[in-house]
Image 1 (tube, rainbow, N blue to C red):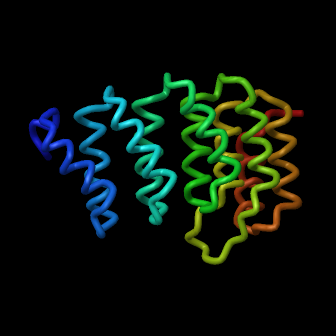
Image 2 (image 1 turned 90 degrees about the vertical axis):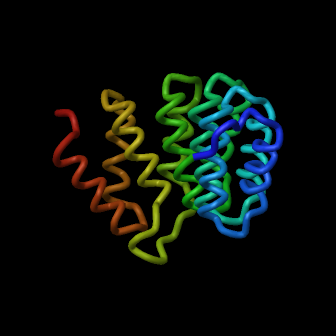
Length: 184
């Protein structure tokens, strides 16, 4: 834990580590420390957005995104940014994190349900390994958690259980229907 992050030199060292350290774990620790000690700083907001847009490691990007969602939820541009990343980020882990944070922090905002529905239906994810995160499944899970009383949620869960290309997602959707779906 770094002390006195308010000092310009300490902040500069953390910012350099967050953006240029060759070790992704070090970059993630620096991001978390910057946020812990200065989430009200506009420079930190700019830095986090820059990292999320330019870092090559999806875990570092996910760390920056989680920090943005936690510390800058009231920033109007942050919501628009998450809506875009949920739908169009290149990496499926990054799309998944954006989907989760969008559902967690902004589920009552305009168009969030529609974006989650779109992600659950048309995300281009194709599973290569069983351990991969499927953004369609994350979107479906978010809809079940945040919008369980919406008929459209369960219609989409049923559709995914029958038609999704990912057998793990079909299994998940079937399990959700069996245990949580409201009576028709």
